[in-house]
Length: 637
Image (cartoon, rainbow, N blue to C red; front, side):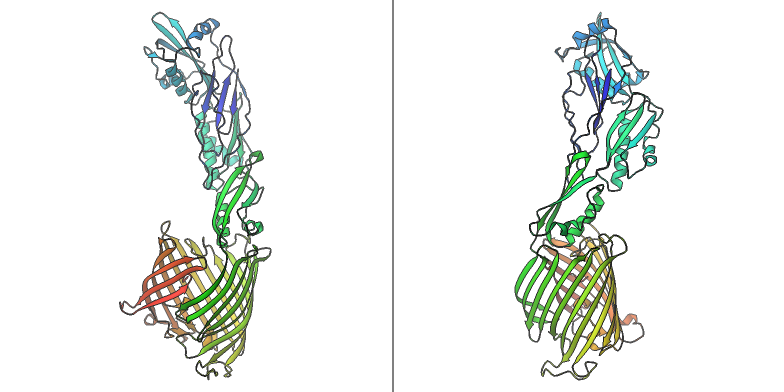
């Protein structure tokens, strides 16, 4: 008698001792890419064709190798279909004794196959032919080839001495006929979806190779849906031909965070949609870790998987925090404000809670700006955010003959929309703003006549802005793939009454691993009595690169389009090639082709923790000497 032991990686047949001799053992290897260490490396006996073989190392998952504890073996009794006569066994014993010389050659006068009707298949699989002189090692290699046919549980060889040579007797134990296949533990796929994987095997002698192919197909089905740990953990073939397939789908026992010295665990775990008790899915985990990365709190994020009880796993998220606070004292320059002195304090992960606090002071002539901002991205469940800003700014853009002096307070409440608040790409927000806007003569400090609605130099306005946004960008700071679009509608009441609408749509297309094609379009319109301070100007984010930011491009309507080819140079330096096309207009009629302006050129991006420092040089209308430099912070779109 014998038994099959089915581990997570192989079938094993252990044959019991027959009348006069222990014929040994045989292990039929069925390698898979399962995340399990095959512990069946013991050499059971010298007559095993697998003796001395090195086990195949399994391959790991996409993120990290996961050693999984093997499934406990299950014993199954299988009848030995034929036995050698006692006298034959007695004669065979000396030749196959483990102590016999392995390089001794004997002549083979005949070969007899017992225990199967597939005699021709067995003979064809063997290298040994009648008339050959072979060693014990060659016979063992032949037994390995016979078992590789897949139809047999066990194979043994003995020789019967004779005049001038020996008879080689090869005895095999056939697998039973496969009559039924059952599944346990499968929740992702139904039995009806898994049964076709064994199509053509039912009613035939069970074949180890065919069953191995079915195992690989099960694994492929799970991997196609992101369940990279889903596979059959055990296969048990009964003596009557029933195959029981136990599926281990890779359930999460716990999720742990390591390396976060400042950030609270919940700040990270709230971005993870997979929870203990869920099945591990690599695609969902990638998306989860991208959200963690987009918090911009971490320099590096890694993932490890460790085995736990009951074939489950522990997910370990390793993070390396980066500096999220800064104190800046210095000077800066941009093409809108000129030279300014700067003092700022920013903390993007306040007390490790994910809240943001910032104080920004800029002083120049005539620029004065002060701003205090605070926000919490998860002030309430459901990714409900809240933020508030208090500000005062006095700017004198190069392209205007007046000082723009604004002070105000704004509060914003936002929430994820449509589906799971953690994963939904849709988001809505409302912003309430109260603002006082004054326009003054920079030489005298007196109100600029006719520039404000009241004519007194300052207008008081209340605005309510509703915004709907759609965001599937992989990385917010420097996207390589995805969409970003938003639409904002703002009714304003007070000394000035108007309605403002703005929107944008950006597409990021990965050309190669490091090369990105970015396409962006933005529009804006102001309807009603449009005060000059609410008009659109070709400056800042609304610049058409290559054109001066001097106010020559302005209007109550705008439409801008940009294309950029973004490529790395040497980290943290990157480059872009760009093309801008757009127009500004105030008349009710739509602009004509002649109203559009375009520019193209090259730029550099220096990536810093605060964002990309941007410098572009653009040429307008194919005039090689009509170029313009543009400086700013952050990508243009």
